[in-house]
Image (cartoon, rainbow, N blue to C red; front, side, top):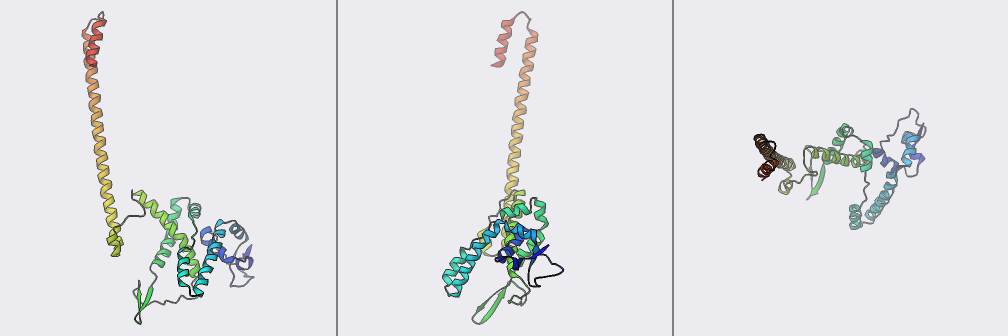
Length: 266
């Protein structure tokens, strides 16, 4: 059974924001009894979203966004920028652990994650300097006006999920090769936008230190084994000498045997 999400709830935008995090996806019924402009979901999915804690978290976020719009409408840019910096962000660590209980599950959805993250990372930006429009991060002229068939809000909601997911995957992969995450890069190379070069240098330095540490630990273990073998051979020699001396003595001289034992022990 399907139900119109927009007509069934007053704060439907909160439910639409939770869709990417909870894994609940809208349905396409054969007969759209509320119209084609509505979003339809299963009744059980809507009931599940009612108990999702993220719904309560998104309500104060929307209140904060209305404050920002109000400040921008009043031309109070200083207050709008200050509110923009203090925008609360939901923590979705619990959601990631629930949706991806195994590392393989997270890797299976990494293709969409990388596509979305790199899409927003490579979006063209433009600025007007002395009457000239300058556009960068693109090789050809692109339209800066977003068309109506692109739902930027939904894409941003997915981006909020994919960025922490990518951080979790990178954390696991970095620690699998004994590296810290996030990596500590050379600030000079970062200032020159040579991120790949800085990352390669970071990998190389950590690989050298790892090899040196492994060689040092191997040398220490070999030295410890050599000392242990020497001590064991010394004990065997002392025991052999004691057995030879005891064999040479008559059995009726216990005092002489005790004297020899003291000499060997000394």
